[in-house]
Length: 297
Image (cartoon, rainbow, N blue to C red; front, top):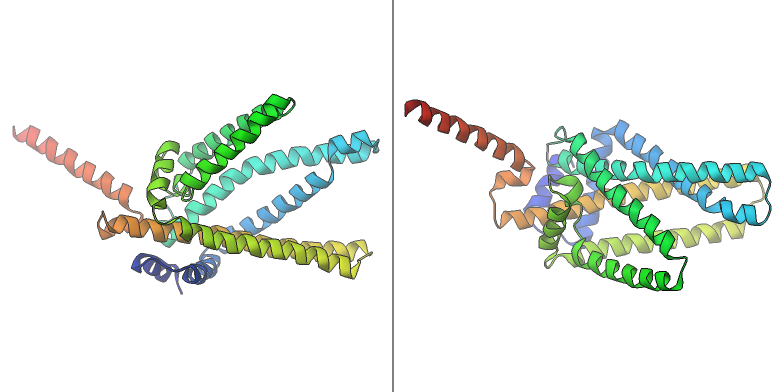
C-alpha cells in the first residue's frame, strides 16, 4: 500500500483499533520505502538516545562519588550527564520533525516543512520543561516543596489526560501552543479512547518485552561481555523499531480523527494539508481584486 492509499483510508472513515495498527504498519513500510535515508538516520539517533540514557542511569555521578569510585568512572559519568542533556534537548526537535514529516508526506505535502517555525516551537517547549525541571529540583529539597510537587504533578497529569490527547497538532499544524491545546480539546471529544487503546497495547507490549528481556538474560546467565553486548544491542534495535512504529501510529490516529473532524466542517481540499496554501492563494486573489477595484475607481 502506498502512502497515497494510506491517506485515502484515513479519510474514508473512522478506523477501529485493529485497523489503526494495520494502516500504521503500511505507513511504516511506505515511509521506509520513500524516505530510507531519514528512517535510517532516525533509527541510529534513537538507538544512540537509548544507549546514552542507559549509560546515564547506570553511571550515576553522585552515587559513584559517594562510594569513592575512581576518577575515570566519575569522568565517564560526567560525560554521559552532558551527552544525556544534549541528546534529550535535540530529541525534542527530532521528534517534532518526524511527526510533521510523516503527516505531511502522507498528505502529499512533505516539502512544506517550515523548519524555522518548527525549531522555535520545540525551543519553546524545551525552555518550559527545562525551567520546570530546575524549579522542581529546587523545591524537592524541602518537605513543603515535595508536597507541592506531588500535588502539582497530579494536577498536570489530570490536565494532560483531559487536554493533551492530540497535542501532535502543535508539531504538525501551524498552531501556537495555546491554539494546539484548544485544537486537541476539540479533537478529543468522543475520541480519547481511540488514542488510549493503541497506546495501552503498545505500553503493554513494551512492558512484556522488558520483562522477557530480563528473564532472557537471567536464564542464559551470560558471562561473556561481548556476547552480552551484542544481544543487548539487538534488543535495543527491536525496541527502537517499536518506538518508530509507535510514533507513526500516533500520527495515523491524529490524522484520521482530524480528517473526520474537518469533514464535518470543511471541504475535501482541506484534508490534504493544503489549508494554508489555499488561504494564501485566496488572500493574493483578494488583494488583486481590491487593487483592480481601486484602479478602476
